[in-house]
Length: 454
Ligand SMILES: Nc1nc2c(ncn2[C@@H]2O[C@H](COP(=O)(O)OP(=O)(O)OP(=O)(O)O)[C@@H](O)[C@H]2O)c(=O)[nH]1
Ligand SMILES: *[C@@H]1O[C@H](CO)[C@@H](O)[C@H](O)[C@H]1NC(C)=O
Ligand SMILES: *[C@@H]1O[C@H](CO)[C@@H](O)[C@H](O)[C@H]1NC(C)=O
Image (cartoon, rainbow, N blue to C red; front, side, top):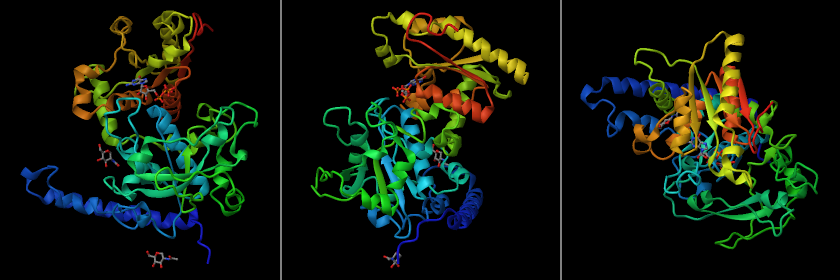
């Protein structure tokens, strides 16, 4: 008998039951914790109370992580996965696209960790669920989610073979000798991939248009038998290590790179109808632990007394850093928007909050990758504040990832927001402030003197 595809309606009740069971186990463990002598407290070595939670496996794997990922997959469940390695926000978008593709193919996504390539390569990968609230996301979108470390033992040295589709080679036809796109995740997960070039029709835009986007539904089609079997004749690469040629896996549908994916238009996360944002991205709320840490940082930046609630603030994101590469032949102080130009947009957001929502917002928090202390002292002169990560010793206490997470969370929790054109970090902040707080925003243009004049 053919394997029955996972139906959403068939899956929902069992998922609800699992949540109930989870809640029950949690309450039970919490009760057990309370019954423990006080001096044990929440000591991390105090394992027994937690063991019930730790041992609770997702019902969508066979059991605890295994040496070979395949040994842990269920034979009645279909999965989907991909990898990433760009700036962190780009990777959030990539994983959002992966989860949306999981929704429309009725598969369970397996999410890798975030890699620190743009922060500090020495920082260890960061678990998706430690920054995004997976149970909340899962409940909001109605499908379970798995993380790679739940499937395959992170310490495993077994090299697994896997056949996957390469989109990158297909959409990059305008360059010479396009190749499948690798990711450092593959090495970490010990995966030896045999790539098959995705068919030309996955490209979103016209064949002769120089653009990297593929379309959601063309990729989804490859997750169903007809389009899949019609496309198996494409160019195939044997896996680099074992040298095995494999067709694209149907149990774990996989693609090399899902950043440049849209339904209808390129760069869709910037557009109001973006399905990946609407059906997935907006439900990717912050893990409560990290959100609390961000709130504490924001409160200290604003000097809020302990007994007062966090006041509404306007968040700003000014992206400098490597964006200077866009400033050919134009001096940086003319290419990047000046602080008075930014202040004009901040006033507009303040005005909109005043007239449309009746809130007077005086706290302004700047986030930026700018490192010039002179620039920051001009920020201070405007009466704005920011989180001083050095004084806070944030990296020492929490690790190198936290400043970027905390900045993103602070941006997202503004009553209003002002961002930088062309930065995905700003794009996501605009979306979040709008969806989560109904907050107004402005985007500052740059690239030449007067670029934002309008
Ligand atoms: N802490 C902190 N880091 C930032 C800030 N702005 C940029 N960065 C760093 O620069 C990276 C920029 O990459 P993305 O997050 O993908 O966002 P982006 O602005 O679209 O940049 P590109 O991907 O390079 O085009 C971030 O992930 C951070 O590591 C900021 O305001 N605060
Ligand atoms: C699927 O897995 C179950 C339990 O792991 C096993 O009993 C069953 O025989 C398997 N079915 C097939 C078709 O392999
Ligand atoms: C949030 O992150 C912490 C680690 O900081 C983790 O222990 C916790 O399980 C995460 N919460 C959820 C709901 O996954």
